[in-house]
Image 1: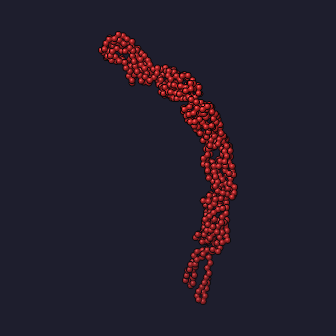
Image 2: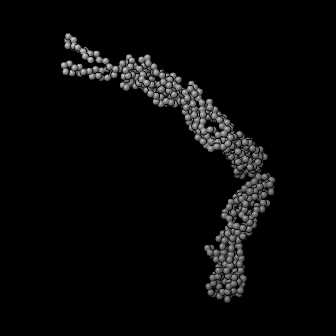
Image 3: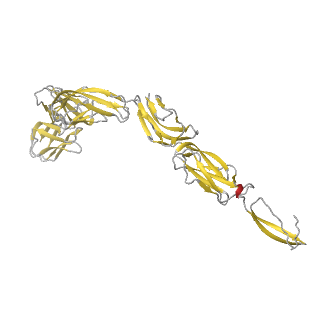
Length: 505
């Protein structure tokens, strides 16, 4: 532009601009230049928002802790950013913030933080210089798992099972959905998140995702939990009536419980004094101390999922039982060696007739006399040590008592004779291996009849089993048959007698 000086030689020029900041103005006259810097500032009178606020964190959980931030930018009519401008802000839907206004920074920006405990759409209204802008942000419902792992029982009705909980409020309607599909027989109430129904069959533990949706905003949130279905509770009864022996150990299994989750067994009326019920298995144990007549007890079985109660009846009597004494706790027998022994002796305190039974079955070749408890027979095969239970029943009281004993069957006791006839000379050393022994327990003894000639002895080697006549006969002796008996010191019936015809010249 061109301007003229006034009478005083002064020229004035008006400079205008739309861009805030420093502007250099240069004046020239007769080839000489002079420069000045002028500053333009933003026009606060024309303050307004530019664009829409930048929203971060939406959707956020409606837990009054997780927040959403809105960042506004303020400019003047020429587009210059305006610092130090106050923005007035209001929110609805019960949202909260630390303040109701914010001030722009040097870049003309100001951020506003919003929290809420109510899910749905929250409208944030901002105003500056009569310019208004409204922005919708979303707070999603807060859902948490309250039962992380659950085992239900097949055939057991389910009511009021709520695996999740929604702790936020809403102005709208919450709806629930689940994935994958629930086990057959179970349904989800989409309005409450409650699972109910009757599981049709067992199923493996599966991880499910529960999603809650706020109908007013469409915001969703999800959490997971695990659910499995145990087999249906089942109870079988193996014993219906029993006479228990007073003052004797009782370990009674009348029922077998399978399936369900943590079965619960109860009995009514109370058991006889000294007896206890295992509330998980139904086993009855203890030592009854008082005689009682026959009493009918009702056993009830359910589980922690309130499976339909199974009820069974059991008759119990407490009476004096037979007194038992173990005569032989450990018995070693040998194949082929006959036996006849009484491992357990019993007497009846009430004058009853006793009967005997044994479990498991005795070794092959042996049998039990059920009237007197005698075990007899000839073992046919080797068997290792086995524990047997002898149960004795008193025919008058009906009570039984049991004790344990052990039986093992060793290899056959065998005597092999190698020398039958021998003539020796007096005053000369003699060593005759008459026979060898194997099998049985390995602990043997020998005897001879009549006595050997003076100076000779009979012995057996504990390691080799050799039976030897040795020594130095001191005088002549006419021919004589000597009966040499070899016997197992441990095994009943393991004995053998052999004859040696001996002459001393």
